[in-house]
Length: 292
Image (cartoon, rainbow, N blue to C red; front, side, top):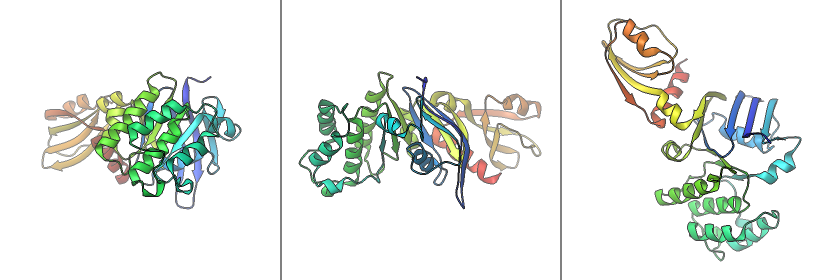
């Protein structure tokens, strides 16, 4: 079996006003992988295609060794999906929804389900229609996790959750992957949450992958840089100018691109490098793509 949980190669999907890809993306087994991007970047489209909701125009999606189209049944046995848009209200009460979903999955873990109910403050007798938006999201997560899936894919799972609930959700996700046997892919705008909990990240914009890798390596790779230099600077890969006021410059610097030495060779003075958050980096890279 593949050492990667999800492998996407050359994926394309064309719509009248948007094209996804070609997209190459790899989610290592046992990782919590954050998929980030602005609205309309292609995150949900990518997730939908993994589960066969729509047909790709090109490329391959594999979950472990299973092709997302040819092996759709086997894939869906091993992968679970969570989204705030999932609606379980038709079952009336939480307990009925649990019993219904449980019947489809022999690997369902009753003890774990009970633990999750307690952790998420959800009772089997609760009416689903009266649950808060955040509680409905936690119910969706409970139904997915209780299956003990090998891959858990979440689309904006923390929408509507307060800070305490977010901590509870991510604590359970960390438990789910602690043995290295399960993998979580999260599409989210909660960048500060992902920076704390995810160990891998992929960033997409306009259907294309901007960067991908271990979270710590990606965040450590870039720096905010301030320097003074007379005159203009030519464009250069690895340097994103954020602001210029006279001879004072603010930019984002890729430390793997040899930019610091390049600036010094051009007479840059008083270089100051500052660590960035994932959100800082995201905003800078997305804006850079917009002006190109």
